[in-house]
Amino acid sequence: MEKLGEIKPLRLLFVGAGGVGAYYAARLISSGNFVVLVARGHHLEALQNHGLQVEHDQFSFKQPVRAVDDSTMQTQYRCSDFDVLVLCMKSQDTAGWLDSKSVWMAEGATPVLSLQNGVENEAELSKVLGISRIIGGLAVRIGAHIVSPGCIRAQGLGQIVLGPWPNTVANRGLKTEVERLTGVFNASGIPTRTAADIRHELWKKLMVNNGVNPLSALTRKDTGFLTKHPHYRQVVYAAMREVAAVSGADDVVLSQSDVDEMFKLICEFDPIKTSMLVDLEKGRPLELDAISGSVLRRAERLGIDTPVTALIQSMLSS
Image 1 (cartoon, rainbow, N blue to C red):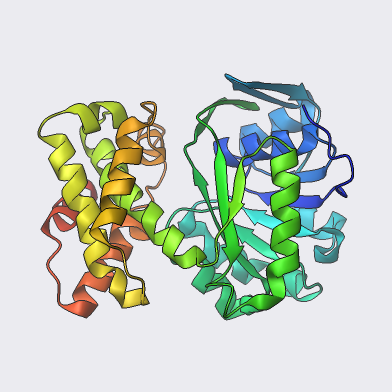
Image 2: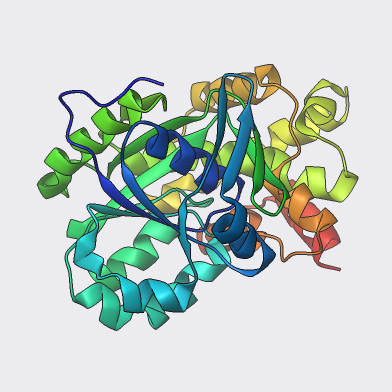
């Protein structure tokens, strides 16, 4: 693993040490950064007693890590102890986490990077913390899940796209922090690029998520099956087009070429179980509200029909 060299290491707090969060944390630890993981349950116990194990085709990690529960995080660390807080928890947990950490967060001005599904997390964070602390981000071409407590299996390039939220024009003050993050992530083996308009990038990812996440949970099939099947691939594409149709509610313009680009990406990506399918199999709450729910709310506001998204949402909710 390439070390940081001339780049100053970062102090990072990862809130949500599931598959994606733990994979990126392991990459950053390997290159010399100070990382604290916030986890819970048997996964936390395994991390504390046996360390973290991550297996990827091009990366292997097994060593002790700093892992704490939510309560210990607040008593053992200050917000200002970190250069960045990385949120990797489920979108439905964002509001509750913000509410319970309001005092702790107010004691510092540490930037917050959201690597969560959906297009509403950054807006929710900015209402409490102000946009001057919010960095939008998305994980691209990665599938990563907990296979057993403390053990992660990951696949894909594991790219990150990040930028000041909602864009660099409205939030110029985070430019230096974003550039530093990008440099450290790339030096840690995480292919990372910045985006001048991160909100546009988040909406592009929502197209993919809305296309395959709910449908995979409904059919119990992986992305490869869905995108190769002559009928299901049409459903995937239609659900993606519905996202483009409602993006104007957030002053985002998704073109036909954006739809085709993201459809091509998911069709070419190695088949993976989506996070929603994994959550379903493990009996956990689904991120329906953050994905298809966000599409339906905007469709109602604009008076646009989104029948594919509405049908799949209804079938999964019944």
